[in-house]
Image 1: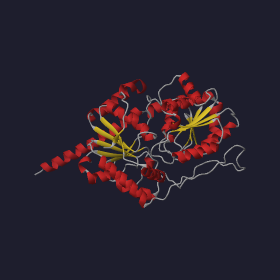
Image 2 (image 1 turned 90 degrees about the vertical axis):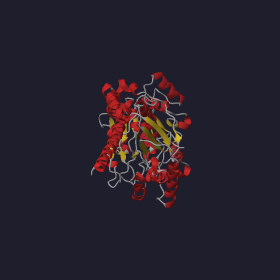
Image 3 (image 1 turned 135 degrees about the horizontal axis):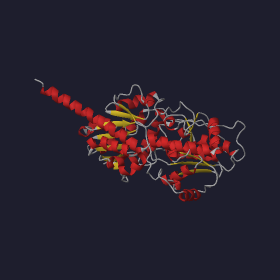
Image 4 (image 1 turned 45 degrees about the horizontal axis):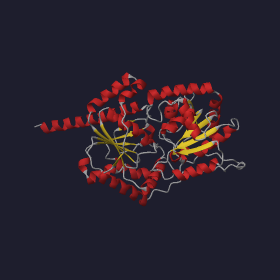
Length: 459
């Protein structure tokens, strides 16, 4: 059997004070014809990444809405995660873009590590990598042992399961199968896209974050656009008393009385943590008491994480005002909540970004965000209203400096950002979108059944 991820139950009614009666009523209406439907979400890992973050809230709310929803993870091992990390990088355009890390033309200052310009290094796609991916997708199909009405397969890691299941257990493929791609594939390597594309052909529908991410030759006709969303009642996003926040900061030797800038992300070249350190160092000239928090989880399916953490630590050097923190330091959702709430400005200096849930998380907490205008970030940040979109390290420094020096402006942006998230990026909207898609697919199936029955009854 596939490993089932345990979930904490949630009640849809608890969200009524946040999103209002009308939205809860709409969700109930969309869910009514789906009551009792069996739904499976299948992904690569139960913790550490954005997909796991999404599913930890979405699956319980599907159950609260009356669906019989499960969350399971595919069969995997280190060799698979190394391969799927390469797939992820190649789909995002690895070797086509360099990490934007600022160098120091006169050499590093005393006590400072020299800045590097690392590339996202990914081996060319090859037959051995293809074999590993195929074997684990086939194994996952072998372990698949229950019928469902809807199956949502997240990202490329388990995207081949349907292909192998049709051969091994065709009786279990009668569900409506949906591939949910969370990745920006606008610059995908032709080799990896050519490999992956045939495995997507059997899917009934696909979900992308933005139209720009949809490959023009994708072999799936039914495409839905759904942006990810945050759970406002999760321990990462719920309100937190000031004294609790300050206690958490002090536990990690962070001074709540000094200014703080923060980036919450995996340690990954696509997130450019080295570039964030360079932004901090330039700001430090005018804000000598400034502190930087770089925090992220080490995901089971991200073998590059520790390597890039070490690169980041070397770049940080011995600066005690730079705090590199992970789940191995005890940092979880509650701690991230505190870090974001305590920040004067939250950064997201990504080079590629499918969506960037941490942007909505920060805005929901009333903090202004300065972020690179890539991927799904511009959907969240209204530049000049809830924060700033930037396209260079220099611009990032200037805009962050502006918000550090003008607390009233920062608070104004933060308040506007919270309302933008309330309107567009809360999990109740994500749930509503899924329910509407399920209803659409169910209606299509019903229409085809009626057409078939009519044709059979003709003389």
